[in-house]
Image (cartoon, rainbow, N blue to C red; front, side, top):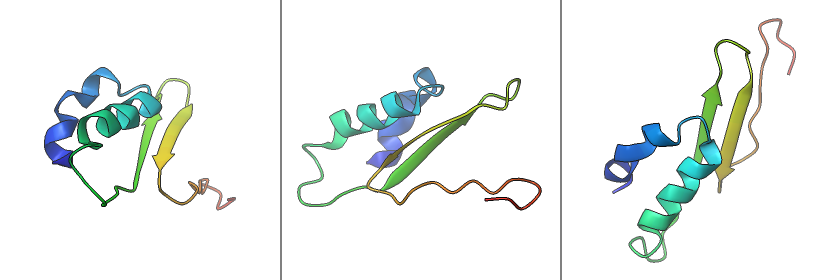
Length: 69
């Protein structure tokens, strides 16, 4: 169901929060007592800016090229 629900995610790719909210809207009545844990990230290649959103997932950890966390 999740895979099928992602069919239009390219429309919100630069806004991870909107992508997750869209999934929630599509699946909230269909998954009963189950839950989905996910992280969606968008990286702007030109600026290097990372935008992320998470749902039911642990905090995102970024490890830089030099090993700094």
